[in-house]
Image (cartoon, rainbow, N blue to C red; front, side, top):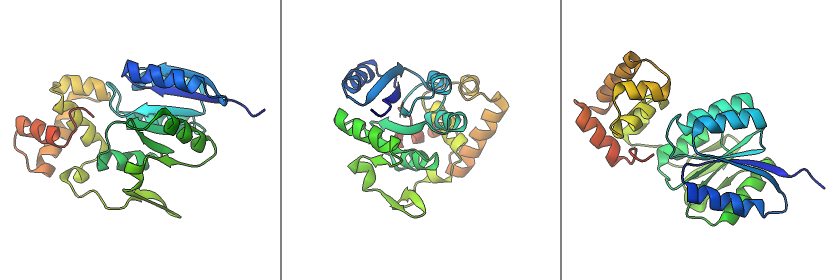
Length: 218
C-alpha cells in the first residue's frame, strides 16, 4: 500500500474548511488532514509537519498567502501548494503561478475537484479549475497567463500590492507595518510609490481604487 497523502488546510472560513476536511478524511488515500485559520499558522504547521499538500485560501488575515507559499516552499520544498479561493482575478492567478503553485481551485467546484487537485499535485502534476485553466497557457516554459495583466495593478511590485490590499481594508500605516513585518517608514515609501505609479493623489482615492479592483476582500 502506498503512503497516505497528508494535507494541511489553511482557511479562515470555518464552515468551508471544516466541511472540506471532513470530506477529504473519507478518501481512502488521504491520511492526516490538519486545519488552521491563518497564514502564519500554515507556515508553522507546514514547516513542522511537512505535509504532502498545503491548501491555501487567498483571502485570509495576516501574512499574505503568497508570502506564506514562498516561505513554505523554501523550508519544505516537497510540499505542494494549492490555492483554493473564491477569487479569480488575473493578478491573483499571476501571483499563484509566480510562486509555482501546483494548482488553483475555485470554491465553486465540488470537493472532488479539490481531491483531484491533491492527487495531481502529489504525482508531480498540476490542477487548475476550468475558469482558471481557460486563462492560462501551460507549455515547456511553464504556466503563464494567456493574456498579460493590463490593469494598472501590473505596475506594482508584490509588496506594493500587499500594502494596497491592507490600506483598502482601512488599516493604519502602523497596522500595515505590523502585518507585513516592515517599518512604518517602508509602508510610507510603498504608499508614495503606489500613488506615483497609479496616478492617485490621496489615500481615499487609493482605497477606492483598491476596492474597485477587488482587493479589499482579497
